[in-house]
Figure 1 (cartoon, one colour):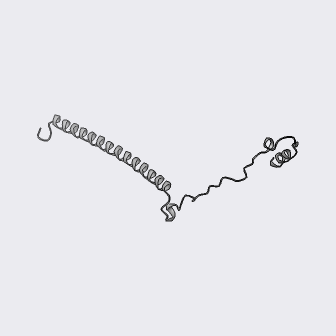
Figure 2 (figure 1 turned 45 degrees about the horizontal axis):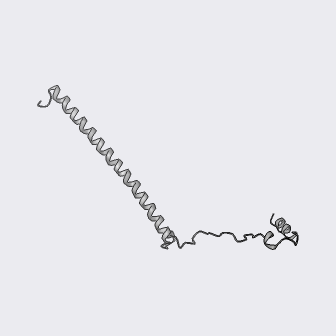
Length: 103
């Protein structure tokens, strides 16, 4: 494809101006490779600012999820304690109505 377009450009008549039939071709590829931003923290380096910020955001998200789980567990414990209190009150009421244990 590239060769065909180059030969077509070369065969153009000389009456055309060079600006009318010239094309630019990009021959350099965009190069991005891993580790260009600094030594990653896993290998002992401190990493660059972006890596440190990303790590801090991940840690903050993990702490937030753990906090939400703890809040849910505390709520569930409170519900269970309330239920146990209701059962204890119910048992006391039954015992009192049956005439046992020093009414």
